[in-house]
Image (cartoon, rainbow, N blue to C red):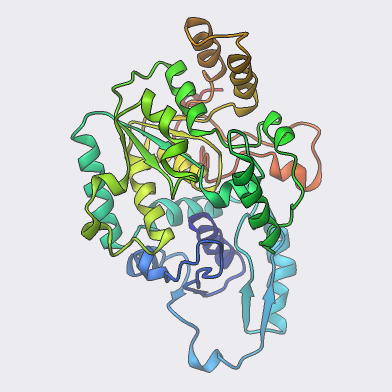
Length: 391
């Protein structure tokens, strides 16, 4: 939501449009009926960007019956596309509705004023609603009372595993349940997935047990307070046993807050995720088990604010090490720790310029291989001297 909304702000500026406060998806897997103002501070959003674009809460009555087109903007598009192809739609239509908002704007090679507008939208204008901000800060205070803490963004929910086809460590019945969910979810295009192949390519989220091994190898002691940012873990406590045995001080919003305190948010997955987002951004160390939308957004926000370590696991390399542990050809200890730390020296969220596309890639794959703007908004979002960035 955050990245899509901020891209639409920039696109509205490019095509000289008035932006209508977006309607949020209420038909996704999570079935969340939250409106924009339930999650975000609508008043602040409108006023903070008033010098950049005009934003209105809803379409005016006199435009309800005006000529309208629904358009799916091309992914990772540049200025030329919007200034020519999309702006030309104003010749025939008064209202343009964007059917999708994810990754509709290029990461790179945009004018500095557009990139800085994305920064203002994401990190200044788009704040959570006051009640979410208040609850989020309370959770942070309660975590801080235990000392410096790690947030582990554990993507081990039913929807994630069903979508990715990753079944390592699951029972046969669990794997079959996830396959059926994937088959029956029409907007998920990939149906037949080889879980072993996906895992070997590094495309699967770390399991809770693997996340524990990884953090132990990095050197974090067993007494470290750890906040689990996640929805309902698939399989419940049965899949958390080994992680909890390593790190008994596992906390979550459900453990830090009472049922009454969480009640206003509890039936709204997006609002609960917003609470996790706040605790994640403020943590001393942030680690994700899979680089999804939220993990990338948190990583970028922490970079912008100059927070501590943001660790991105090298899942492809780690899988090989985990398999060696399983076969007994390697044991946990100094050798494993040295290998894991060496692998992640450059994966700690340090200040550096955003990475461009992988050499040799073309077309959509070229854009897909770039580091996303919102995972690393540098140097566009900071006025820093050139030599402050690491290579």
